[in-house]
Length: 212
Image (cartoon, rainbow, N blue to C red; front, side):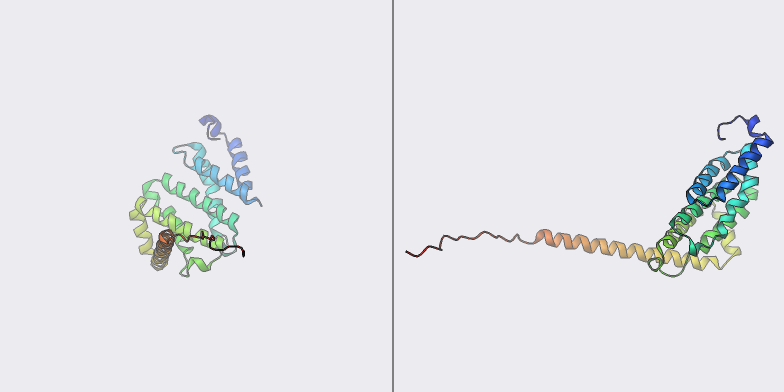
């Protein structure tokens, strides 16, 4: 699809068949197939000024965004992978949208990412949920420098999101500090062991003689 001539990409029958295939993949029972489909859509969505990408965006973007409605508390690790691929696809949509029409896309993405940030310590959560939370925080941190004005507008429009972000950033900072302290303690302990004098286990047994 990425290499087909534009005239073929403009074929309605081919586009209908192709988008239908992707729609079925997005709804497939296998998380692996869903993830692969989302990865392909990221490339297709990113084809600027292409009839193919426009057709795919109009047809499949709603299904991609629909992944955000998943009950994330019930997702296993494979499900989290699928959801994060959907996040990447929406990020691509933000990047190709016209500047004057980009805000709604950024708003949708930021609201979803921020909604996944919990106030509880990530260490107390299931591994899959913790992975999702950490990934969402990382994406928010990455989006800030890219869309500073849009991000400011979103957080201004939805003030309840800011405390969640601040709490997640504070928890991350505490975790980084604790990890650093633990690393320093391990290094100190290793140095102490290195500096300990070696115990000599050799002895002179020549004083022991058999009775005459």
